[in-house]
Amino acid sequence: MEISKELGLNMYKKMLEIRKFEEKAIEFFTQNLIRGSMHLYIGEEAVAVGVCSALNRDDYIVSTHRGHGHCIAKGADLDKMMAELLGKATGYCKGKGGSMHIADVESGNLGANGIVGGGIPIAVGAALSSKLQKLNRVSVSFFSDGASNQGTFHESINLASIWKLPIIFVCENNFYGITMPVKESTSVEKISERAKAYSIPGITIDGNNVLEVYQTALEAVERARKGEGPTLIEAITYRWEGHYKGDPQVYRSKEEIDEWKEKDPIKRFRELLFAENILDEDMDAQIIKEVQEEIQNASDYALRSPNPSPQDLLNDVYANPL
Image 1 (tube, helix red, strand yellow):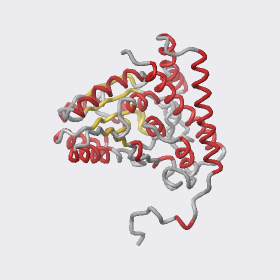
Image 2 (cartoon, rainbow, N blue to C red; image 1 turned 90 degrees about the horizontal axis):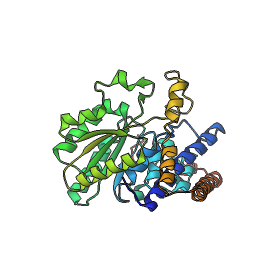
Image 3 (cartoon, rainbow, N blue to C red; image 1 turned 90 degrees about the vertical axis):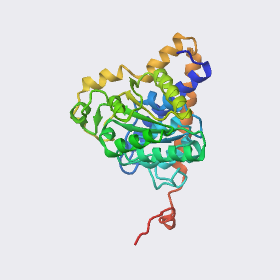
Image 4 (cartoon, rainbow, N blue to C red; image 1 turned 180 degrees about the vertical axis):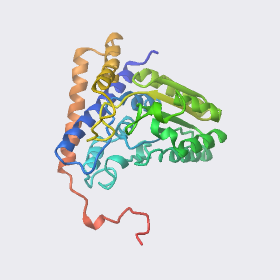
């Protein structure tokens, strides 16, 4: 498909922002500056960017435990993201959420979720809200192959289909649910085939081709806005890092990882932009420099930000501690 120069460069830059953000996160993790673990999005950048580029700012997304890429693709403030990752008071959740619970309501990101499949019904709720209030907003639920075996997945798609809700279900199939290969845990060859049971369109695409993701998402968004209901998109992709930082990865080979690194979505898109004369060496160098500066500024902001005050421990907690 043909795209404008502005869109092409914006998508390329956004993919680079995700990659560089995650690389900086690894650096901070090795310096013991991040509490707990984290789930990195390196290798999957084309899915988040392709889908979110087809959305309006006030459209909704609901993310996953591997959510940094979704948040950045939807237009998050990198300063607040990095501060949250380091548990600082200036972060999106005031340092209380960390890696798996970053939310940015202003950009339509209703939050990441540490429970596998836990965000799917939240996205359906947002879509129902949009329909009832006639807001003309589309909701996107990001989840992975492991979540497609959860009851929340099936219950949510069934309800969304019955009520023809404006929602897109995006399955980021990276072949492993923690250490379990999808071929050993899932009853269908293609997860998109499960759409048939709920009378909605289902399509499997190359999740490392950002333009294919974008085009497919555009069509699903148009269908949703017309009131024609949900679409299930299965994007085939691959996480370069382990399920979590520190994962020994004994369940897959180095050769497999290297093979998928040759399918780097950023490299592929960069080559396409050069071939279409949308990008040249000088522009590429400038974009890379801008991204590196943004990440460095966000890192500096996070490092100099204060830790949360002990007096604020129970603020923003909406459950009865008794």
